[in-house]
Amino acid sequence: MSHPPVPARTGPDRTPPAARQRVIGMLGGMSWESTAEYYRLANELVRERLGGLHSARLLLASVDFADIERLQGAGEWDRAGQVLAGEAARLEAGGAELLVLCTNTMHRVADQVQAAVGIPLLHLADATAAAVRAAGLSTVGLLGTAFTMEQAFYRDRLVGHGLRVLVPDAADRAEVHRVIYDELCLGVVRPESREAYRQVIARLVEAGAQGVVLGCTEIELLVGAGDSPVPVFPTTRLHVEAAITAALDGVPAG
Image (cartoon, rainbow, N blue to C red; front, side):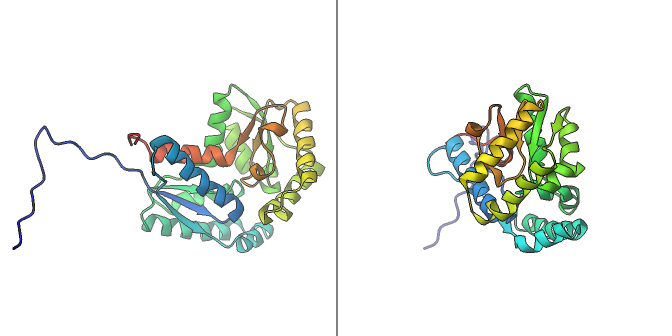
């Protein structure tokens, strides 16, 4: 014998449903080595904040980095932006409620990606600048790919937050870039490269850097706070922290 459904409780004594996590859309694969860090950190942070068996609500689009790298090298940024914008739109269609682009360099096309969706894109440089300002610093050294160090899109975003940005000299920029693409993106971590980065950091500090922005998501695989005489700002972690804070806004701890 079937029974009618029990009506929902109404009235002032009804307990409102708990707020749920917003779904984070991760646009990654550039490289997958650092995107794996995004995934790991997001889940660890949710577990820390909510407790128990909680984990992050995520959608991941992972592109073929070889295709994107070819477009970077050819200077075809608009085409690369079209590829990422299409992936972002698919994430939104799949239920993503906010978006993170899991790469510093491809924030070169962040505006193009944002224009393709109706959900917010959390800009990596904004999260980084907020951390630098919260630390009370005004001058930072910037490490990243040659595109990030030499082009204006990233430095200008930091400058827009009131920061002074220093970059390594040409030889150091070339070495930092080489290590990223020839080693870190392939999962190779070499002690010799760690020492080279330490020396680059030391020269930035000598030039006046009060802190160092690790402005490539792979760099955190190689160096950290113990490799620098001044504070470092790990952009991957800072970006994920900002995303989780936004996703958990109003969600009570478990």
